[in-house]
Length: 451
Image (cartoon, rainbow, N blue to C red; front, side, top):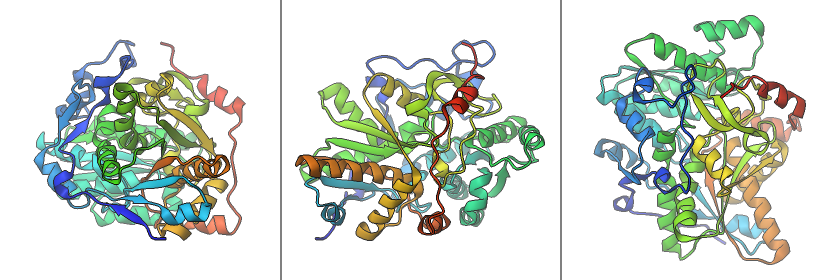
């Protein structure tokens, strides 16, 4: 039983990004200034973001044109294939139709260049020479390094220490594209030095790495900060994934009963899901849309829906999101891209409205499903993607038990070629599951700002 790949011609590639803010049944809670607790304006973001991205961050337009310069680079790997996972269906003996949107074909090996390229473009057009950023597993850092190399910009990446140590080839990939990659927390920033003074062996977190990158960007006139997830403009750029998937399913004569994606900050899930959430809001569709997170970092499933900082040091504006607290220090799981204390405000709002669902899974079960996927579909998935695969496998097994023929679509957001140490530990039986203790979550949440 062979795979079925549904390709689009590059002429069918989206020419606009979709902005779900225009269709929300209830407006997003405002982003607040951390000092005044009042809604922020464009001037508050101007020190670290270009105006082109700030305008997208606050846009109410349903569709935003993609610049021709960005489209030209997208054509290097887009449109990406939608694959009917026939071999996986056969292995599971399920009546379900399983599709995956394969984003691992980009030069950086993940969905991240979908936003890295436009972010570099808008900064370059406004005269910015350097970008700083954070990265967890390294997918975002390598994507921004790739994008900056195309536009002749410097790129500096603060990489979470545990992933820096676990995944040296991600760092080498960033360096191949001309970026510098620093283990975070680092002695190069005030934030990093303070954390290392308290805990010299700190494994780091995305929140800490964000603080370091924002601190550096704020200290240099030639430098802006670039974020790979969470913010509205990032969710906007990623919707090329779902817009293509929507069109590909039409060609297949199918429509999803379930849409699944992994979530850390939320960008790849949002990119796939938001066009289908649009159908729920505007067309009355009943598709289940499921965000999957690690049990060790359960922002949606166990976090509080409160205002919090996006970083550990409290340098960012206050975002209303499901959060474990900006002081939360996640365990050193191998899905480094999912080790974030909060979640994209757009996704949190949709979750609060009941338009999307969330579930959490342990990493040993996730890796088991990842290996099944590799042995049936051929692609070795990143540990982050493996969370979506596991949820899809579990859903397909439920279809077998019930005899229901459902269409399941999941986002395969990146390959696992640089994650082989994780697989080595899985095969050796050395992976450990983490159910983060409730008392530690509540302790971290005790430091939430009062709004």
